[in-house]
Image (cartoon, rainbow, N blue to C red; front, side, top):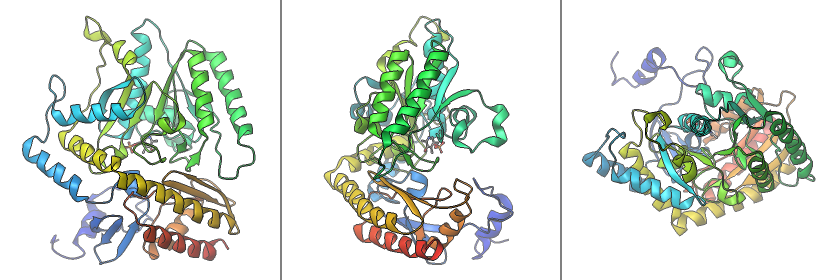
Length: 440
Ligand SMILES: *Cc1c(COP(=O)(O)O)cnc(C)c1O
């Protein structure tokens, strides 16, 4: 088998590669992508695809962005990796300081990991040890239905009510689950669902007081659970209750961070200061695996002491990888530029105009927009992640050159910020056409 043969890659792939979230027996061959720029992916057979999901929510400014590519290349020639225990380097320090500067108040301490799941694992372990270091044993966590926090065992536990993890149910630790008050544009009564959620939370807090290590939530938008959106008012009410219950609040901003919700972070938009924030995905502009768990100074200080027993003994080989940090610094420069902020606002405008139209098509419900993220539900008898309409939609859209990946019967767009108005309208025109064929 020669690598030079045009069919070589797919043959080798079929023999040696195991793809994520894929039933290889029925999936058909994956699409080989040879290059990309801006919001466009190019396939081996010369087709162009518009990447409207930021390649699984990571790409911020477009693919192969020359400024980030150059920053990574320059860093690679200087220092590609160094052990981060007992050593440090400028890109990690500067990136930590800059992200801390963008986050509210005392969220100043950055613990580096290398993906969203490990950022969540670190947060969960940090919360447990924070209490333990003060002589208190707290093992109860509170999450939300539809919440997704990653695929490692602790993150799966926190997201156990997402419906994704039945296979590993018996490996998961128990987590109390509250309803997530999902709302949409034109929801006549969002307060009712919020009141219900608070009622359940109050019950949990009353029953488990002094045993709750932390509450973990995806603020403003639940990603994998179906792009379900909640109001800032709910997060403020949640924060008040967490404070009254005397426990910790973890915001999983792995997806919502770095401008997706229209603000730099969802916590800024909601006006809530959590105790711990998890960041990954867009942190490196989508170039390299990099993540952070950012804690309040007071949490970090609870780990100080004479011995290693109170230290946070957790770490990963590629902690604070210099290439990822260099990409992150370049990406932040691009994000904070007026041009990018204007693009984010323009993307939201197009979402609002076009989602309102899609919402009027028969069989469509609950159009919703939060910053650069937009979603809508298709009426389906089998609504949910396993809905049969998802794969049909995906294929029909792909045939039109649009890369979208519906979450079951939920169609969403989460484009990189470089996407042009013309590309956005082309995408929405294509979507409207496909929806008329499939639903209408
Ligand atoms: C994607 C995601 C994760 C997991 O991140 P990985 O890098 O895929 O491990 C965690 N939390 C949220 C909210 C996510 O969207």
